[in-house]
Structures are given as structure tokens and as C-alpha cells.
Amino acid sequence: MAQGTMIFPPDFRWGTATASFQVEGHTTNSDWWAWEQEPGRILHNQRSGQACNWWEDAEADLDRAAALGNNAHRLSVEWSRIEPEPSVFDKEALNRYREILQAMIARGLEPMVTLHHFSNPLWLAEKGDFTSGLVVDYFRRYVAQVVAALGDLVSKWITINEPMVYVYMRHMRGVYPATATGYGTAFRVIRNLLRSHAAAYHAIKEVQPAAQVGIAKYVPVMQNRPGSNFLSTPWRRWLNYLFNDLWLNGMVSGRFAFPLGRQSIPHLKNSFDFLGVNYYSRWYISFPRLVTQDWGPDAVVSDGDFSEVYPAGMFSAIKWANRFNKP
Image (cartoon, rainbow, N blue to C red; front, side):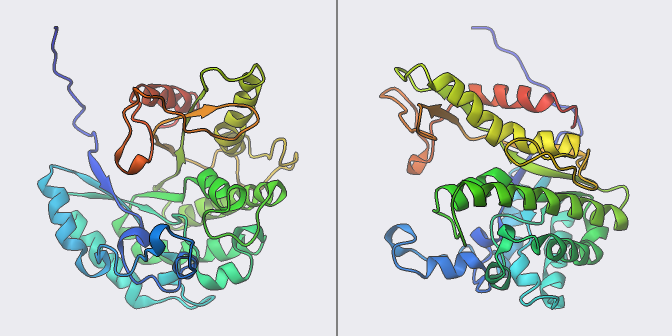
């Protein structure tokens, strides 16, 4: 069998990633913290508790990342920790994030910071979070505070992590903390997420004109489930449009598209400098179901039955992203 060596360019980034609620521990002002206290919400009623204790011991994990030969790390900052009450910003929390970012840089790890990674402050949830138009200005002000405090250490920002996962899991399936569910709610949340992204993008640019700002988009590769009925093909195309195309088309054009309406959104057009692609697996589609997990007897499945291991889908996801002509 022929063998070869793959050479990566010198500026290629090999990295690791963390999400604030998943690793920091004791994020008690988060809607996820409140959600997991309710019996039956989480498998075996598990609690995040101190999680990985990243908040106190991030440097030890960064040592491990550096030892792996990494030269980058993506982390998120926890909105509920930074702004525990409306318009009250915790300077000690921001200073701790500065320490973590400085520790990354000292270890040769370029930071990439995500500003929203699924979790919301409890006070925002009480106001309706992204189901309410109020969120746009709250998010803009929060982002402005973070960038003012940390911007000298960060040149790459992600406004929102996997916005359509947020919508699908919260407002369609109801398995994430949600104030309301249903198609109407989901479409309203997409509109408010797009508005919030645009507001955050320009808030960052006001402070850091040279900053690179984008989103992280989960891109599942959709295929018809073997043996599914003839309606599965148009159904798959519709779901692919809703989950993959709708968001990016909005950021490119600056307008909502069906089924969100036809409204033009101020400052949304071309409001991204790069497109982050998160890829895990393929989705099997069978009309009228949303997603099936019929992996088949020969499938290689990841630990915890999270998904089928399907490397070929990464090529399809990258091809999809390439048409937007962004890094």
C-alpha cells in the first residue's frame, strides 16, 4: 500500500477546546445549573458540581495541552459568572479569565474565545432569554464588557457556539433548559440569535477593528435512512436547509429568509470573518421524523453511543462551508 507524509502549513493550528459550564465547576448562576437540580432532567440525576475544577486549576490542563504539542486552545467564558445580575459585572471573574488567557499564551497556546456556549444567566432566563427581543441589547453589552477586559489577549472570537443546536435541543426537543418549545418559538429564537450575533460582531469591531470574529456552526451530514420512503429525500433537503443553510444564508445576505420572514436585519450582512465548522457524524433522515440513529450493525460508534464515527462526512462538511468563501 502506498504511503505518504501529509505536510501541514506552518501556521496550522492544532488545538483543544473547553466549554465553560462543562468544565469550570460551580456555575451556580446558570440556567443549566438550575435545570440539572430538577429530578429526572439528567441521566441518573447526575450533577456538574465542581466538574473538572477548571476555574481553579485550568493551568494544569493547559500544561497537558502544551505537552500534546498543541498551539491553540478554544474556551468559552461564562456569561452567568461575568454578569451575575443585570448590568453587574464581576471584575474578579474577568481577572480570572485574564489569568487563564495569559497562561495559555505563556504556553504557546493561541486563545480563541467563545462568548456564548449554550448556557445563560438565570436572570436572563427569567426574562425569556433568546425567546425575547430584550436579549439582543443585553448580549451586546455583555460582549462589550468582555472585549474591553480581555481584548488585548484575544484576536479570535466566536460569538455563538452551534446556534442551531441550541435551538433544536432547547426549543424543538426540549432536552436543554427551555422557557418554551415549538416551531413558532424556535423560529423566534433563530431571529433573536441572528440579531444578537450581529450586535456582538459590531461591538467587538468597535473595540478591536482587526479582530477575527465568527461563529462555530455544527454541520451534520444528512443522508436518507436505508429503506426509508420516497418522501425522505425532499424532507432531508428541507431539514438540511433549516439546520445548515438558513443561518449562514442570513449572515451572508443580511436578511431573514423563509420561514423566518423577509426582514432585513441592520448590520447582519457579511458579519463574519471566518466560519468555524464543528463536525461529529452523519444524520439519518426518514420522513416524517427529524433524526434517526439507525446506525446499523457494522457501524463504529463513539464512546457513550454519542454518534456513529463517520470520517468521510468531514469532507462533505468542509465542501459545504467552502462555498461561503471564508477561512
